[in-house]
Length: 275
Image: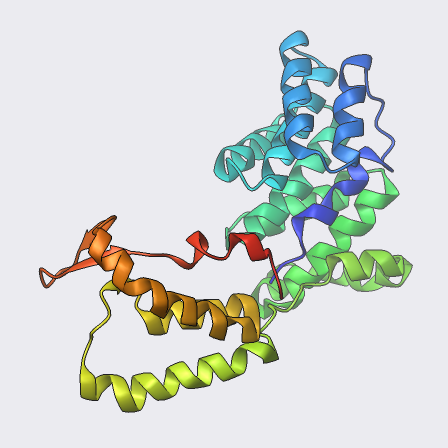
């Protein structure tokens, strides 16, 4: 897993020496508060007021990063960041910030341009917070790819030389996160489902008329809510006859059989995230 995108340019509105015009002050404040949607709206408004020039470029940058934070329009936001990074007429620090954010986003989807973008930000920026983060992120990116390290031997040596100067919070922020595994509370449910599918299911055949099947529903409930998955699937068993008799949300299966959609999301939203 790559570093999370939210920390990446959070300092963008807080620490980098960027001079915001009056039209972008509100957008910057909203971004710093984590109000991505409102920040994007204000950035687009500021962009419409500034047809060209540094303010328009900064507004484009802030709008694109806000879209990434909302996990909406990710590909379009990436393209906008890539365009800003490569526009020679754009302010250099804005290009560097766009390159850094693009590099993280491209890394997240396994793209091929992450190293070049992070390297550009690392070599070109004059802002210490971005220099540290771009360098640290590039360090971890190259560390995971021996072939690329050999190709970028000079950059790798540079990163090795200056890494001791990176603040501890930068190391923590940029270090790739390990993907969290299933919670211990979900183990009993997963074991029961595995036993059922291996020992009981093959003998009695598929009998569930709902989609997902009751075993898959129990598995999802256990992963999401741990031991509470038992009570959730018990409710499913009680509801199954009435759901089937209502014949709502039919889903034709490849074998011609009709099953009825009854997703977990329709019955556990009131619980929130109990992990």
